[in-house]
Image 1 (spheres, rainbow, N blue to C red):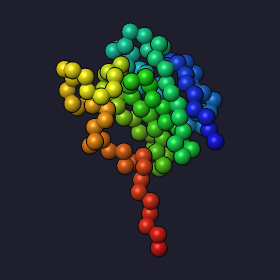
Image 2 (image 1 turned 135 degrees about the horizontal axis):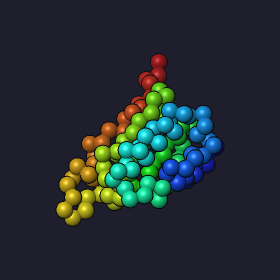
Image 3 (image 1 turned 90 degrees about the vertical axis):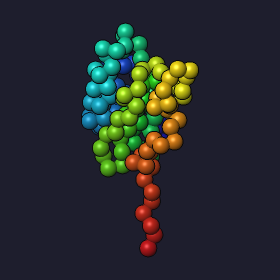
Length: 116
């Protein structure tokens, strides 16, 4: 069983991620991408959880980085503004609704293979 943890953006990621260098690189790339739009990226925190033994990290109200079953790294939510909150606020456009039913999570939760 793996326990989730948090780490500050820009600081050293948890030791549990050492064997996933491409995952850590994707998290760092998101921090770099966000740095022009945020006053101080180091004030943001990553939250690390584990889904079926694979890391999933989410930056506060920002991008989500997940290691998929095939070993590739998926980044989602990177085009949404950091600190945008949850759901659609007054004056926001529906394309920023984090509860959009059309969002495709099938790659994170693939259908099981049919039994013979």
